[in-house]
Length: 109
Length: 122
Image (tube, rainbow over all chains, first blue to last red; front, side, top):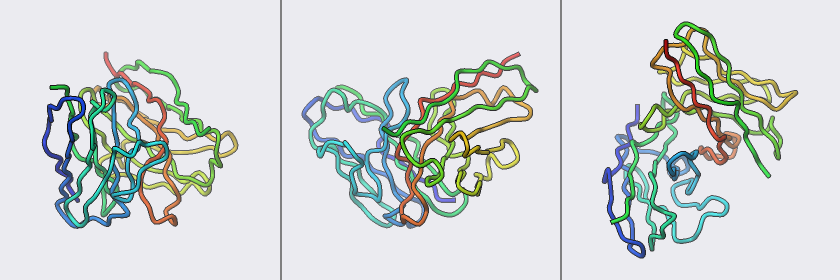
């Protein structure tokens, strides 16, 4: 089973600051199979990034993804008030076929 | 507009059965997979399984194999998640989510239902 470890667990930032979220896999993951989601309280997750670096439809360009192999990063270039939420990475691989990281919470400093 | 609309919240007793639904609209229901994801209170996301309504091909996470049944009725563009005997530990929010064909080369869930809260308590 591929385990995804996200860091940090919580990140405190001010609006306008840059956010860098890490997702580390216990084994190599195909970039085509790595996605990032945002979840706000009381809402369903929303797809942000797929294939490690492709923005989903309607996602602002301040969100970007990068990485390969076992290390992936989600970057928010300038935090806006609506970006404070929990972020999850997800991979597809060997059984179980899909796993999620434990999440990184972005909170207002 | 792509939409996945899930059935409403449920309160059940341990041992009872339950079937929740997820109705797709705004796209070809038989051309995408539908996955189910569990989120226990205050916790992260767990993939349960996935079904291709076009031919009912179904895959389960080992953690949920034998615990739940995933099905779909393509005639009414609806996917289902069911339990034959609920436990208190099944208390959670359950989401359905659309997934592109595997032949796309990608693996992600692009549209999500609003979630169905299942509470199991005696």
